[in-house]
Each structure stands twice: as structure tokens, then as C-alpha cells.
Image 1: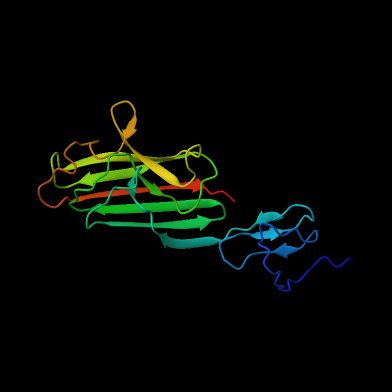
Image 2: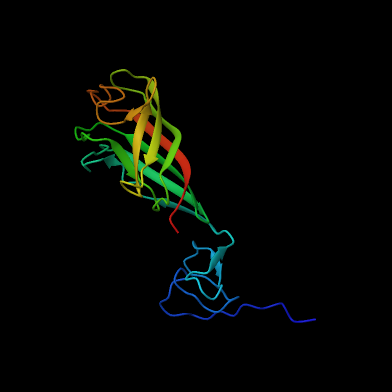
Length: 197
């Protein structure tokens, strides 16, 4: 009976990343960043064959803005987190608005933590308005990242009667930023997508 059991010995491979390393057929290698999967060399392919799932839970800055980059959320707060399992990223963003006069003119959007491999749509979002014209109100919010335009910017939409429309300064409610006092509103969205390897 031949010996088919092998023990791993760590060797530092210099500046080569795991996605570029080829190695010898059967070698197992990895990056020490803790977020890329372990890889098995086939002796030909840079990066080999990824296997195993590493789960990482992190917070990140979602950079909530309008498409021109001028939107501010007043004294509010934008927070986000993600769980990365292999090439699948589960994310959650929460934005708490306060009174502002700088609300942009373009469609609202935020940045994903990693570039998406393909166009993705998520529909698990809600805008809760508690003060201002038309409050209290709730709107269903969707997010779409169109990789023809960007692999990281997720544009935001609200559900109208028959279609999704751009969420921006004067929609879905023209009085959203018209409150004379503090603007109490909160937005959340969560979903999952495949990241570019």
C-alpha cells in the first residue's frame, strides 16, 4: 500500500499572492489574510483550485451618497457590515438621517464591500420616515449593482405601483427633506451577492 497521507509544512513564497501562485500539482497553499480560500495546485492554473470556506465578519464604510457624490446625511450615521463566506458576501447597511440641506440631486447609492462578479438585485430594504411631510411612512427599497456601470456602486430604488423608480431627493416623497425640524428617518437594506475572485 502506497503512502497517500501528506502533512503541510509552511513555506513563505515571497511576494506571490495565492491567486497568482502555480506550484506543483497537489500542493496546498493559501494567503495569510484570512479571507481567501485554501487552494490546491493543478500544476498549471495560477491560483490553483480554491476549496474550503473561510467565514469573515467585518464592518465597513458604505459611503452613502447620491450619484454625484454631494449628498450628506446631516448629523446622521451610515453603518454597514458583511459576512464573507468564500465568494458569497452577505451585507447589511443602515442609515440614520438627520436634518440637512445638502441632499444632492441624483439617485442615492452606496458602495459594496467587494466588487460584484455580475449584475445583482436585492429587495430586502425599507425606508422608515417618522417626521417630515407625509410621515409616518414606509417605503420598500431595492438595490441594484449594474456591472456595466460599476462593480461596487449599488443604486437605490423604491417600489412604485408597477415598477421600481430612482430613490433621490424628491422621491418617493417630495417632502422627505422638507421638515422644518429634525428629519427622523432610517433606511436599511440587506442581501447577498457573488464577489469577483
